[in-house]
Image (cartoon, rainbow, N blue to C red; front, top):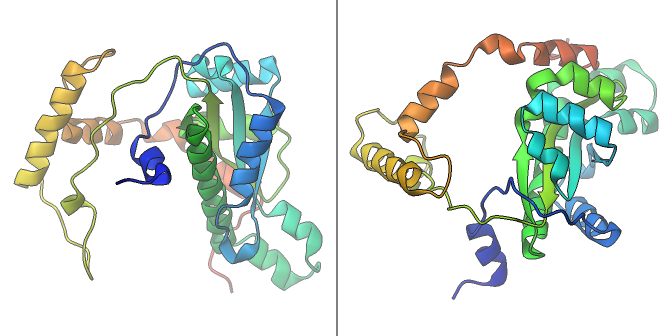
Length: 252
């Protein structure tokens, strides 16, 4: 028998169509509360959450992401890696500055923001809400930073569109466990692996049979297409990180 928590996790699917019903203040508070109780690196709580309710800002995010449906979600959260707050609490000296601007602390903030996001997703689904986690906010990172007045030592990591589902799409089959779960050492994969071939066939059937946006695609083709994107599309991410004060260099 699967307990309710596992049932929620195993039934996950991204929702991109929502009813017109907005989240209540209590629902927003519940999701933020769930985020705050998620694991956080060294208990430093290196993230912040911005609720985006301004229609003009939502329209800009729709333009940046290419997904205008987010404007009709019940609520939109911007998840931010945040070392700025801790900078205000720490002594002003060279070691503090080096630590806060380090790759280590950047990653810690990203981890904290991502873990908090997943907690909100699961909490929302337990309440009957649906959501989509949106990395596409990084299509124009500098514009997002400017739009939300993000100070140095902060960085936008993810968007989270949440609402009352107006759809229940088919669940995408995940990779076989043999391709992602190993014991004691990494196990390389080859493109001709029969397990992968079987999974490719499963994904092809999924795209053929699902209720909308049918297409002819395997998982391997999906990865090839993703890796064929113009790398210049998000090359400003590094520029934005440096602008935000992260050194991305080894300590000297």
